[in-house]
Image 1 (tube, rainbow, N blue to C red):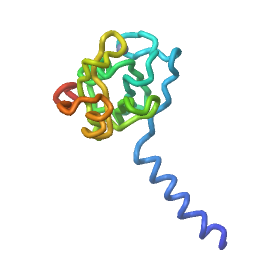
Image 2 (image 1 turned 45 degrees about the horizontal axis):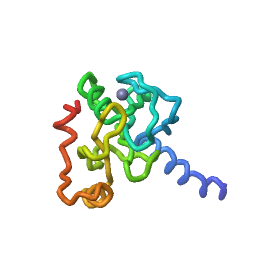
Image 3 (image 1 turned 90 degrees about the vertical axis):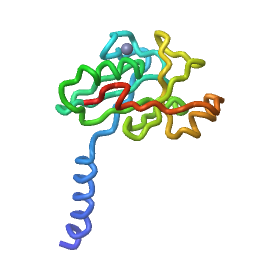
Image 4 (image 1 turned 180 degrees about the vertical axis):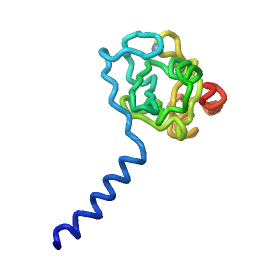
Length: 143
Ligand SMILES: [Zn+2]
């Protein structure tokens, strides 16, 4: 009985964290294809991922492709992530990310949208104090 008393709160915690939303699935560089343009994803600094309301995972080689997907989506996805430019392979929740144009760092197919954790980080990494974040919601017409 004492054992249950210790385990039950942990079970509730685990269930609560599952309901809070799924984490992004790692992108397999050189293997996964972009859900919009079908190109193989080859650069781990660009792109992102969307998990639909039904739990289907969509991966993108650029944030431009993710934006096109958002614009066409009929319903709000369960979660959207951007690849963290400064930490390749890691994700930021798009709602919390700072997305900006970085014309000096063009990615796949000439894309220039990159994501950071903060404006300060974007300015430091891109070595440009004039960097301004763009409004992702306006840019991508997020449903
Ligand atoms: Zn693409």
